[in-house]
Image 1 (spheres, rainbow, N blue to C red):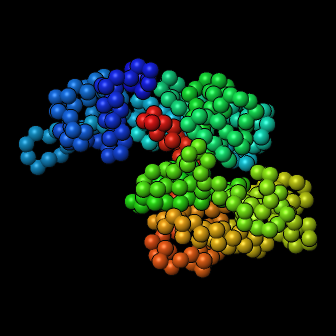
Image 2: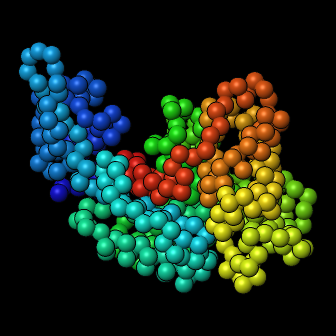
Image 3: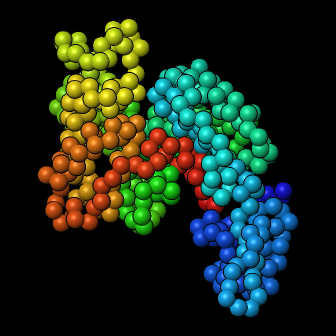
Length: 397
């Protein structure tokens, strides 16, 4: 297959072919006549390009368009098997790894692959071993894997490939380090931004173009969509809501500062507060797990959903604190949609209801009328789907 995305050898014809693929991805299958009108090309030129793309394997015929009279024109669209994208979503105690085809369908998915995240070279090597194992097991042509996209927490510059929060052990960009280890082209991006993109493209967004996505996982971050475009900021560092100074506490955040929102309203805060209250004599169905040292965040979430009163109380307190901060963001951004996602969103209404109540109390009424608030539709798959889609999107930038 000829690589039309090779930027060292790109020509005018390849640029038009890339536009054709973008059109098919955004609009679905189309006739040559309709495609030529949308791209302002002549029918003969469009026909020639489509024939070449069929020969190269990027485009295929999908039958004929049903019409009431006259000839039935052929429908063309992206060949799903012309390329693949791997997405890697890193969580505190597991990995989600997926394979998506060029059409945007998940072909393979491995959820909750056991992995302990630590900011160490060994943890980085373990991560690469998991990803390499996943790719080795795939029943696809490995040469058709265009990108492997990793979701990285904290400050990430997707344009330069540098991570400034985790796995930043050398002067070499992290995407280059990962690429050398797994043998494929690698892109990195912020985890909250990837989740936002996945939800925006295939989740609960219903035409809204101004969206905030709240990622409440072990840490806390937001993704921002403004006028239909994913907002990154100058260097890709936007969305660090968890590190806004909110509390006059003496709790040291992992960023090195005290009083961050994340210290009281996140998965790590849930774990800390629960542990402190158990030590102070309160009870829970997780008491034995806490005593034997095997307690993880997912246990706390399951206990919440099984109506453990201590867990519910802590989650509700976290929801209220999140709502107070989100009210300010709604006043600033005037979004059409706010999505609650991340690991802790799987507690559902236990987190959503107190959060919504606080938003109503502290946001401007006029602003709130414009805003719909909902839970993530993709849930724990948002990150891996977003990672795959960002990998595909990188081809067109």
